[in-house]
Image (cartoon, rainbow, N blue to C red; front, top):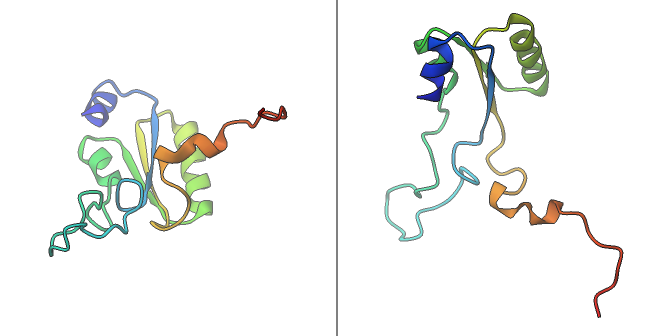
Length: 111
């Protein structure tokens, strides 16, 4: 409902959703072996940009880095409520829950 609030007050907000079709990765398999998809998998090809359109804002579906760059620049220039659905590869990168590898490493050796 944050999208509705942004549109209702016509706030100059640009929301970027990095959409990999799921939580962590959109490629998980149901651990029980059942026919249902894993609970971390969302509907493939979800178009979150259409939610912003539904509330009267600007929705953009970006599938390339160039499209993403143009969409962000246009959103910043417009000052209108915008949501960019940035489609990314479900299998690339690490899930957000494992950001510890980004922490700075000490140059001191542990004893």
